[in-house]
Image (cartoon, rainbow, N blue to C red):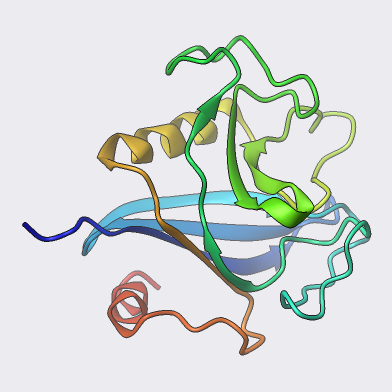
Length: 168
């Protein structure tokens, strides 16, 4: 039986009036395109895009360009489907680790109304987008995230590159 490959690619979109670039998050299960969610990363005024080797921790910039092994989908309540119990530090019901060394992950932008963005995490703009992301996990755990800002550091596998070309 062939192994299921659940993978994501994050790419840089346009700068928005709130000072954050849109980040396009696209997902696949094998060759089946699951869809796109527009997220943010980094803080307004700190939108320098770097690679893993050139990143500067603690400067509120976006998640660096690179290839990441994703952690599991964790729920603040300890069980799937509870969207009211939140991780206190991030005001989000879910967390998926992207980069352990810098505590970068996926979560809801829980303080978006007061202070949009993050300290490097890929954050969902609203609960609807977060729930779409959770539905992607119904297809199985995601193994890889490729963050590609066009800086030439990340090497996306040829099959995924081909699939990505078909949605652009």
